[in-house]
Length: 194
Image (cartoon, rainbow, N blue to C red):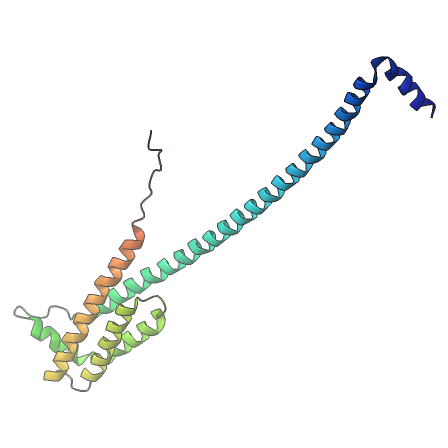
């Protein structure tokens, strides 16, 4: 109580208007400090929310990149393996006058093995093949399987030609798909005024 009386005695010479100004100043400062703390807490909450959203978005993009990398590796391997099947279908050049008809005759005699390779290939890469490529390869498989019943006779040769052309077409399509993923362009973002 004695301290309170000393404070009143010290303020008395200043007058009532000064006392009111001091009291209002103290109340105002206290109000502004509380308001500032409230505003600061609000901004910190918003900042943490934005930071959390950015972290989540970053994790999603990291996972997408990881998935894309795996998918690219599988498509690359699928492209290489299909090219290998196509290359192995082609018989070696055996005599000087060998033409495409002779080659088709040799391909036709191996259509059973070729259909087995295509089936195995489709089982291995079903999930990474574009739908149009899968359908064409499935058609090549069925033709090779049917052609294996005829050997190097007319229908067998037609089936061999069809199967080879479909595999050749799919090899080109897969190569193009792999090439399109490999060509990544980075754009330099500059301001329009620069």
